[in-house]
Length: 129
Image (cartoon, rainbow, N blue to C red):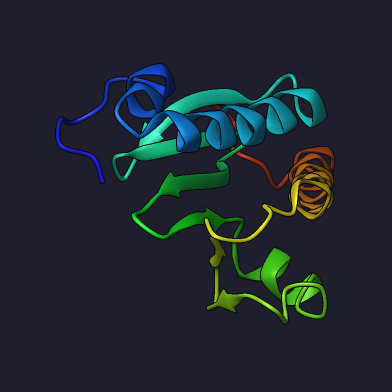
């Protein structure tokens, strides 16, 4: 869906159709609300939030939103994700169905808790990238 390489999440979102921009802004807002201390970045040419490593990625495609919360989150929410196409560390939310924003929030909360526990246990990264 993207043509130019984005420099930041604003650039990325500006490069997708308006109706999809609204969805991406909602996902971005959920992540910001849940993890206000996470840093925004572009990694793998898609929006990424970083909190002691990659927290979650998300991306727009022609027919779906890709959400990449790591394998542990996919496994933890596999029951709630059963109606979606998913793989080891990703899930596809079709654009022709309502986006499950409440589920996205729960997954982000799960990822933030895991990242903070890792940091508290002293297993986190000592520096930011």
